[in-house]
Image (cartoon, rainbow, N blue to C red):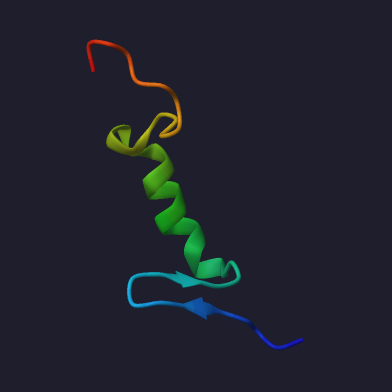
Length: 45
């Protein structure tokens, strides 16, 4: 099966690659990227 990718000017959606593991791990362990972006904001936020 051929690889399929959807591309726009700002986004590329493609299948996972082994080379994606290290950058993904870095994002997941970065304190600034932690949390649920869809969680409701508190009144003090």
